Length: 380
Ligand code: NZQ
Ligand code: ZN
Image 1 (cartoon, rainbow, N blue to C red):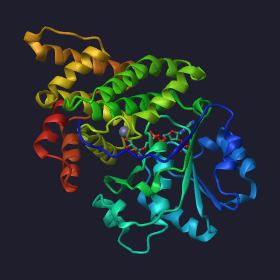
Image 2 (image 1 turned 30 degrees about the vertical axis):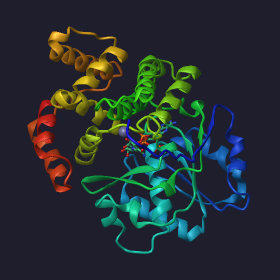
Image 3 (image 1 turned 60 degrees about the vertical axis):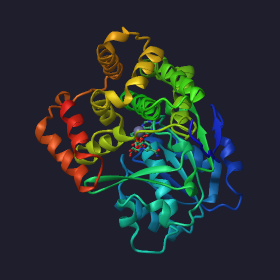
Image 4 (image 1 turned 135 degrees about the horizontal axis):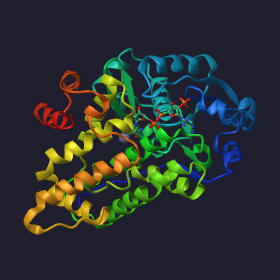
């Protein structure tokens, strides 16, 4: 196991009927700006409930943040912070709203005019020295943004990751009942995203990190148990509660400590979204089976371990490649059991679209071009 530091300051308030405690989590003289998306939190009545709880401590609202939040939209939010004089941001929504709020918390404190170039060179976190404090009410189990310090912002034909310890949420309300209104498709996207967060940390190289491996395997098996169940029974509290907590644990930094990670699946998936508007979870389901097939030699031992401990697939030692093919087929079947497609052709896309994605990756210097090509062509 490698040396590591682990730090996570986000307070989790998990469970139903906790929202009234919002009042205690934000300073009593806090000047709060509420941040939300394109209407789901209004339609569910959540925004009204929060307005009732926080009263005139809310000095402004910024809403309309789109899925895969865009730089230009968020800069309007930064202007709103200045106008209303907020000193605390409360994000109410899924990964897009939470990431957008983190970005605004940083951008609102930055004086220079080169924010976009820092974002596009993946160095936003290092150019900003302060940030507004923020908290979240998470309505979509998927990204883990509620308990990590990262975010992903779109601009033109690119999607850019940033991270800064300044934007760990101070607190995260995780009430599974707030996710009951999610469309079936978004639940499926969330299961795939959380699953892939775990495997991008776990299916790399064996460094004898036994607790981390077992923790990953437990979470993966739990996601398999509750994923479809949660889609089919949206108000099954226990299934949803497990999905919510697994999604948070999948990317709060704890699982991957002391181990090598490989985020090439996300790098490729982000470009599918940037070029063709794929939902984040859907992009990963297209990329990951092909990526494992192409990277099978470097990931061999961990793919076999995953197959045995997560899918109960054990093959003959004499034919590892056949076993790996079965494991990859099962991975594909798992995503498809959630009604998420696993190849470009399922979306009526082919070589021409792959070329566009490759051009986007090359434009932003993402990854090894020949590896990218092998994976994306295999995903057709
Ligand atoms: O905008 P509203 O109206 O709220 O609707 C949203 C949106 O249309 C809707 N929704 C959210 N909660 C709901 C709901 N609808 C009904 N009931 C609810 N309770 O769901 C739609 C998708 O929301 P979005 O926030 O875009 O989805 P998700 O949580 O999957 O976030 C995706 C974004 O997070 C980034 C992705 O790249 C993408 O931009 N990620 C962030 C990460 C991080 N911060 O660590 C890691 C991830 O790998 C990921 O890259
Ligand atoms: Zn993800």
